[in-house]
Length: 198
Image 1 (spheres, rainbow, N blue to C red):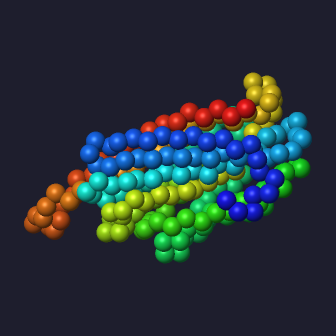
Image 2: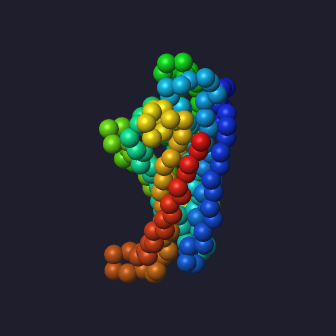
């Protein structure tokens, strides 16, 4: 993460899962808070990191979603651009009251399509990555991110962050050739991680 001056209080969540002979799902997500004296709001930056490691097949999809509750406002999220295999997440300058921060990072993946299914109104972040199967037989990771504002009020006076992250990895395996070309068997694996940061 670059240009993250003023972000601190890092927290980290991770998991590793063997996916029924298809490969492995690996998750390592970082959370940062804004260091400042503010009695009205807290600010959190999340850098997701989910990786698919195939075993004799390919990674076809890497998806991440989070549903936020009342009192949470999505300020920005990304990736914002994709050029070939180079993906940039630039959350710009977060200015809201006394908070003013900039955060950005890059990652590389053999992505054919990024689908943004996020919704500011409902407080849901969902970013799906469809990978180029021909180039995704090696380990592949994606790292989208977001910045949210949490209101310090009844039921959450300290502005703590609480959410459930949903991670998905899909693997595809060739099962032979048929009348209409190569056939594939695909399997989706998912995990939830509940996060509470005070």
